[in-house]
Amino acid sequence: MAIYLLTGAGSGIGAALATVLHERGDELVLLARSGERAEELSSRYPGARALVADLAEADAVAGLAADLPARLDGVVHSAGVVELGDVEGQDLGAWRHTLEVNLLAPVALTRVALPALRAGAGRVVLVNSGQGLGAAPGWASYAASKHGLKAFADSLRQEEKAHGVQVISVYPGRTATPMQEQVHAHEGAPYDARAWTRPESVAATIVHALDIGADAALTDITVRPGR
Image 1: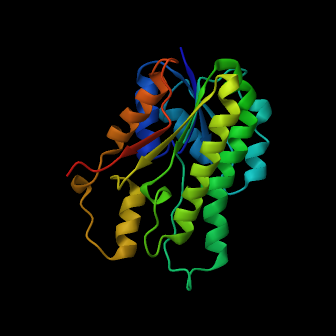
Image 2 (image 1 turned 135 degrees about the vertical axis):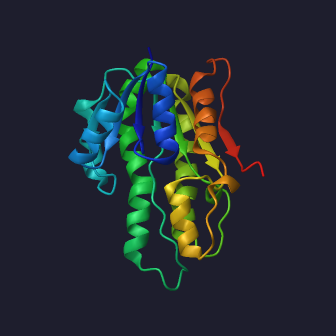
């Protein structure tokens, strides 16, 4: 039985992934932003452990070291936020919050999980974005956080190779999640979930990355809507 630490299991891609792993019998450690969300996740995924830490406070995430298992087969960073706005108009508070959640929190959590990942020759999966490979108007703060996440993954991959830890970046395009609905509302565009990639399809890609044998190293995976 594999042991996985997941963020973002409450909705979207993270929830789809947690469901697959839970149903096949893997052991889950789920990060929740509040005690209320922890109870909700524990109820949804019986047997899973829920740890509480607000990803907007990287120092709190760093304090989880003593609560993690001694061995991890993988850490999947799926949680994230998006706040759209042009460079001139978006305030620095939005930039700080986006960078804290999307970049600094994954860095902090990965750092405390490294001993367990090394013990399990585990995998770090960072759910990035198509905006981590480019940047559209109005997306500067989000794209900057995702470009930073790519740089973190690329560096960590080389550093941890000798320890048997693999690092995989997944770049989904527009995916039918609550975040995508929020983006459409900001853009003033009608939202049709059928037009975009299903979160279950992205989750299946992540499961493949977690399961593939040690003889193969996946590094960067792009998932785009098929329509």
